[in-house]
Amino acid sequence: MSRSVKKDTLLDVAERLFYEHGFRGVGLKQIISEANVATMTLYNHFPSKDNLVEEVLKQREERYWSYLDAHVEMDSDSPFILAVEAHGRWLKEQSYQGDLFLRAIEDYSGTDNEIESIARGHKSKLLKYFQQLAQRKGIDNERDLAHQFTLLLEGTTSMTTLIGAEKATEHSIAMARTLVRHTS
Image (cartoon, rainbow, N blue to C red; front, side, top):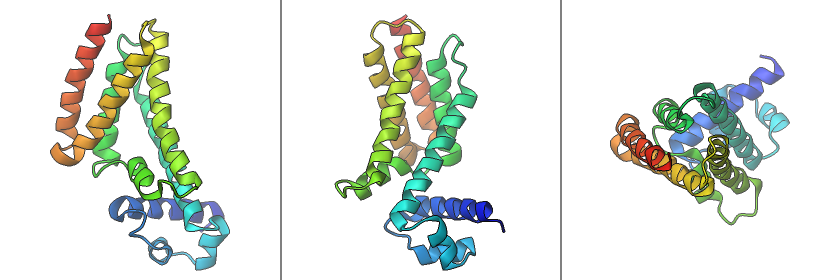
């Protein structure tokens, strides 16, 4: 395995394990074992577990935004609805057991590290994303609408663990249509 393949394998295995068992529930030995790499390989790429968690979150965030960008046509009649639909598909495919970013905020809150900052940054970026969509559409109350859509997606994410991604997304799309109608 090449150096970058090993790093990618470590990141993928770590993300899966962190998602399934939580950040505190997974040790580096388990990641090394399941990635089938030497201990030094892990430490050559990631000096600490915190550094590995940071990179996992960055990778996941990059994948999320690529996913959203691939499914949302900015010039469509309603990029807001497309964003809600895309988020729902992401939940079904990638985040059906809850939000890894919220878990990171919970697990690392107040620990004075980059992990919480990365996770909170992801949430702030979502708010800015909807604000920019509203600006492009010429909506006057872009800040309020951005907060409403961010809350809608966060609520959809939370409800996924209770009623499933499909049902939560179905409800969120109905709510998104109502929000869009009231801004027109």
